[in-house]
Image 1: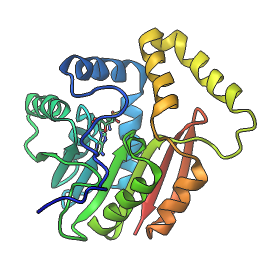
Image 2: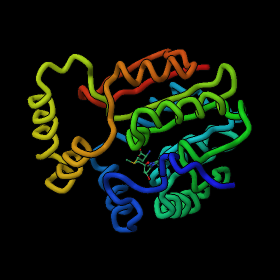
Image 3: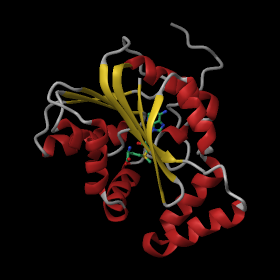
Image 4: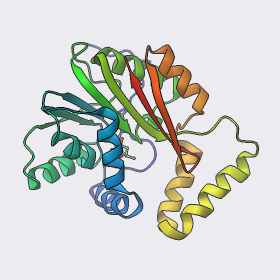
Length: 233
Ligand SMILES: C[S@@+](CC[C@H](N)C(=O)[O-])C[C@H]1O[C@@H](n2cnc3c(N)ncnc32)[C@H](O)[C@@H]1O
């Protein structure tokens, strides 16, 4: 089937090139250093409440750390990414930890097309900002269709608060706070994120979520720009 000429090409990376093996390795090491992965996993498990019958879907799995974590509580996890190198890395990680109930798939928010209402839990972390706002809305509608009624959707991303009074001061404070613990290379990535990636404002994202049909059960904000939404259908 011929694709529409106007279709957004989500397979083309924006921001850091995770198509490069070295970048993936570096991302995984840095992620374990800068994030409290254990706490994030606990929060994700608590919010989504998987059981041994749960069918779970993750968009933008990256190095697979969270898919591996949820697979221990669920029946099956489908972990998607648009980067084949990320998927390869994540699959090797799952194998090395003797995890057998994850299916890794090369697909994204816009290209994963499955029959509706088949997942109990859908989650995505630090990935939706790869899409411009209009395409975020298409992605969220797709997620809504894939989720079972009463299912849970957990969304974490870099989002900007609507009450920023001075955006220069806001971004400079973020950058200054990151530079010392994370080093110059990561700081460059954050600057690139602000300049070129599609993180949006909280009120826009919340409107996109509710207009897609979701009810927002809980919102959490860390460091002023890492937002977590727990939603249901
Ligand atoms: C910053 S990483 C986050 C990885 C992981 N979720 C985490 O929290 O560590 C973003 C991931 O989203 C993937 N990605 C980018 N655009 C995507 C899309 N349209 N659909 C699905 N994944 C996408 C990238 O390839 C990358 O692996």
